Image 1: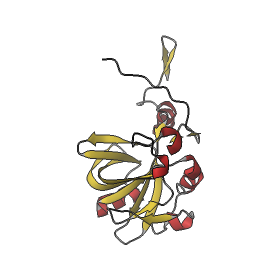
Image 2: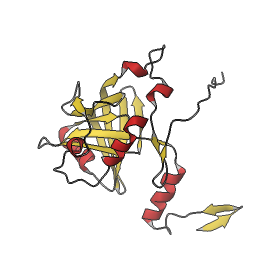
Image 3: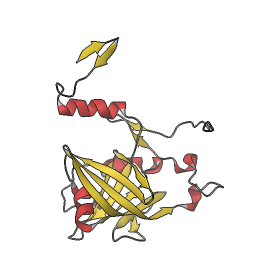
Image 4: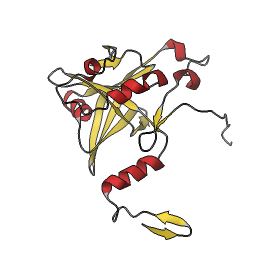
Length: 201
């Protein structure tokens, strides 16, 4: 660590990877949460939250999540079976999502262990979180190893939305969706204020 023009400079080549991970996750905030449900090739259901989550493409629609530290259960299941669901975490589900992040063994069903209600997905052969306001059902598009992580990209084959959170224009309403996010340390972000800004012409 050094300083330059009143800024602290962190060089990843000289910082412990675990410490740099903490620095990154406290800097890139807020991060949406992909609460990934999947099923192993042995038929065991899995559910775990990932905060490295975004859209990769809109045509075709592809979303992605990153499994840091290699292919953990969700990533491995997605690769092995070619399908998974990303469930959006609302404020009412935050504690359950956090509970499902515990280090369960691969043969443990987090839906059962954490008492999370489930229902079958509509287009893929695994479960979704019954109370999640939005479920993004995916078939594996590709997986990419990047450093110590695996990026899982899934082509969206169905997106189910609770009508209770839909606005007059047919899109999810931010306030009703009430999606939480991950911040640094053990912090979770709650929905905040919004501002409408027209894009410049």
